[in-house]
Length: 632
Ligand code: ADP
Ligand code: MG
Image (cartoon, rainbow, N blue to C red):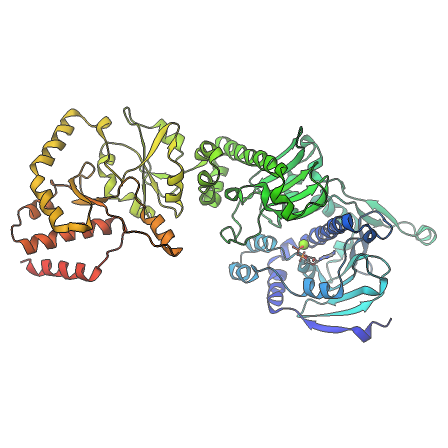
């Protein structure tokens, strides 16, 4: 069959062009990675074939061993990576090698920094593996034929990486894919046996299929006996090897293979569970959050194998959502090979594995927090907000998760979240029964909240919570180590345990002394507040708002309103500080109009002080101006 008749020239998707240019630039100092990317793709193709052949054994076409071959020719300046995996049809070749299907590409391009090291990491994370061949090759040819199709279904794809590629039909008796790189001048080193051997050992040793390299022999031998191949990798699935035999570098390389993330994992846990349910797992904590950690549809989950046969990527059922940043594999000895995503949802064995894996990750994090606090600080910075979803999602592990949480606190007054609940408890004052916290929209608002004044003066530590998920967290984490968590901006703050008799008496007498002022303000503010009372928590501010113990906080209110829910307006109590000059001034005001303006301003400034919004900002401004003009 003549090739030319079916030849077709097509343009790369615009984004591919941009990517190719950037990649060739930014990855130049890491150019050897092309080999690992191509071997990784070959391994994926073999995995896919083995999986599809479970249902259609005829795809194996007689069943030659599944393997990857490398054929290099230094004189011709070529290196070929060959697999007898699933292969590609013509359409698949056009789609897979001409476009970037991933939704994150635009985001990827916008994140490039120009810093080689960082960009190289990004490129890895976005999985643009195949295109890395153009860093070292001036021309790339792909010969591929899908398993189960006739020899005439072959496709010949080629490109110089300059914006266009051509595809043509071709006869291919062998199933699978052969990728031929015509190396650029000066890159012939990559066709060197010794170099290839060391690169494969470094980057692809863990690949579960044999990687065989064609080795040179004497000229006359070559003619008489044909090529000879030598296996140059370990060819055993890494997780099936005993922990003691796997080197740290191998664990790291395997992480890169399954995640496309160039940066090193922070920690991992490799273990085998035997007994009623048998499985092996290898779980990694990445060192940074993926760009799509907060995208609802983002891929997450583990790679699932059944008795070493690859079954699927992104199996989500094996870990809870709040551990969605964990990467890795699970290999079950008991699940059926033909298990589908739908079946995973109903299989009771999955729950057992999920419980086990969840514990394994929590234990790993706890160990990291204890033994390597610097690494744990990175975990918290990257994934802390996700972990905070834990107490709500996984009540059974609440206490364990609580120990992993980190907060800002008045102990340091720094935005770094590095105070654990255990640290807090260890610093609690004699007589203190509750763990105090305040929630706000930002660190600055939390730190300067008027609700903290008295607690600060008393030397009582308060946790400063200012993440979006914090109200959600504290709604579900009600206590730690037997001590209730207490929002200091809510309800009657009972400081009896840490107040002296004298202070208590003074408080009572203040309340009596100013009862009529309280009454007058309450009458003036009417429905704006549920109650007015003399404060137990202010020392410097004139007033503050206090929500009822079980009322919806501002964060939750905003989340619910954004979701389109109608939320009944909450009614706070106003606490006043009669020792403050402003309150003295109000108390001394007899003219009712002016008194009303002042009382209302008191209420409004208390709202603003905690980052709240005024219901009628315009009348606030008018009020303020009236008072300013009245000043002489
Ligand atoms: P990724 O491997 O992350 O999907 P690549 O750029 O490395 O991205 O590969 C793009 C796609 O090209 C693969 O998803 C696969 O569909 C196809 N492909 C690449 N190499 C092979 C191969 N050796 N056999 C079959 N398909 C391949
Ligand atoms: Mg790839």
